[in-house]
Image (cartoon, rainbow over all chains, first blue to last red):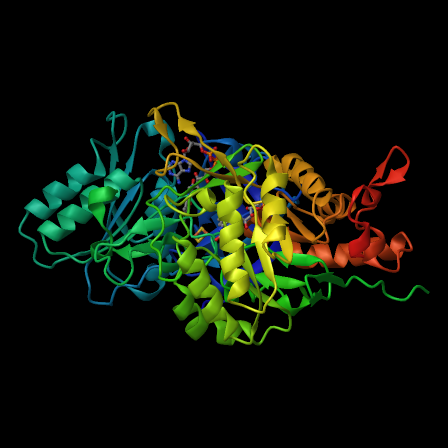
Length: 269
Length: 320
Ligand SMILES: Cc1cc2nc3c(=O)[nH]c(=O)nc-3n(C[C@H](O)[C@H](O)[C@H](O)COP(=O)(O)OP(=O)(O)OC[C@H]3O[C@@H](n4cnc5c(N)ncnc54)[C@H](O)[C@@H]3O)c2cc1C
Ligand SMILES: Cc1cc2nc3c(=O)[nH]c(=O)nc-3n(C[C@H](O)[C@H](O)[C@H](O)COP(=O)(O)O)c2cc1C
Ligand code: FES
């Protein structure tokens, strides 16, 4: 079992970086030393707060100076709205790092990152880590609904990424969905077969998984699920297993959040 | 200098070092929470509900948050009693506190078989019978809403074990005291009040229920006033000890249950949010007793003052 900590950390910054999108950083040497790309944290919105009641899961978005962790989040409801009001110096309780994280690609493997919206959060961290060990450029398809929601373009430029951006309304980058780009890309004659790393909304992941089966490509997806504990206790975060003979359900918090696409029963997703 | 207060309580012959127990389904099989504290500090541990054979559980979504509450339809996903005994119990056995198994059966025979199996396992201190799960099609809550069937299940378990039998009741009945009295007569040594309240939530945008199971069981702070009321009612109507639970988040909540007469309390949903809750309640209860110069926790139990009189006079006195 991975080492898991519960720590009350002090917020260093929590600022809006786009419409309804915030970046939060806090200091924790111990969590930073354990964290791997693809893992997540359960964040408590305050001890005296009974509504929202449960912790909220967020992917680890990056590590800085070996002692700071960051999360990137979108304000979509009660919990994330409350989180966005936290100020520098406020204490928050964090449990992590949780989950399995991404299997790093082998040095000679070609990788393709596909991110939808906040799905960029863990993939950014993964690219950052890979940049330290690999020289070649990573191909990335990144999609948002509209230009106003686009974040991190400058930061991605600093990384060794060959980026193609899409917006659904065409207000920035290519008009359409990341999965359209994937179709085109896989339609070409590829010299080297890529390994796909994908994170984003479930319908997007489903399409990508099905493409990976068609083209017989290795594909890792980072899934979301409704979570109460994040610790493998409540069994709330179930996803149906493709081969359900020995294990009917996987638990996203424990068996994932990253799964090889073929492990999941996409029919019911 | 006050000597440290005595927090120990007795439940149906089982001695607990303190009245704080972890509720079934919210502490896993035990080992998941170990990194956070030493569970030997707890009064007892009740493990995830077990059935005779493994159960896959319900399709997702299985949980949804509602204001101050958690609605779940896990469907008793569990590894089955045999795997539990083989794989999980050795680990739990290292913990220096009573381990209580929570059992669930599809039929009355299932309950009897499980009781018999557990009887041969020394390390299990007691059995809590779940006749109150709202999230499974057959059995479960159906056993807990009919006094005759509830008594039959209790009787079959009691006949097959010498270990103390605790019956966990459902709140989803018109009069919980009728069921409480029925299981008491059938030989239950204690009663846990309460399991989750049936509830549902709807996604307005999709017009679909938020849980795949349509309905689920509500737990957490949202149910505390109702759970407290049910404990109060059951305490006044049975002689056996009552274990109170439902929405306990901190030691003040725990004290409320003890004051209305619960002999011990269970911490459920709170474990999922702050895994250290149960341990913190033990520590805070100790501090509270020191502060209030209470030498023995039993001085608090049933100490509710109603019209100037102690609640325990209502019926719970002779169990002390
Ligand atoms: C492993 C994991 C990693 C995550 N990482 C990130 C991250 O890095 N950045 C980020 O912004 N979010 C991330 N999420 C999602 C995040 O946890 C939710 O957005 C958050 O819990 C919403 O809380 P809320 O109280 O604001 O919304 P709620 O009030 O709970 O919900 C508001 C609305 O959004 C819907 N909703 C809630 N959660 C989700 C979800 N996960 N997917 C789709 N719809 C949802 C609800 O059904 C509701 O309609 C992650 C989730 C998981 C499981
Ligand atoms: C995720 C979850 C799983 C549960 N599983 C069980 C179970 O297996 N057996 C059982 O008797 N009760 C189960 N319960 C009910 C709790 O033990 C408890 O009775 C209920 O949640 C009320 O207490 P609380 O408000 O402190 O959580 C479960 C509750 C939750 C939230
Ligand atoms: S969130 Fe509780 S088991 Fe995964």
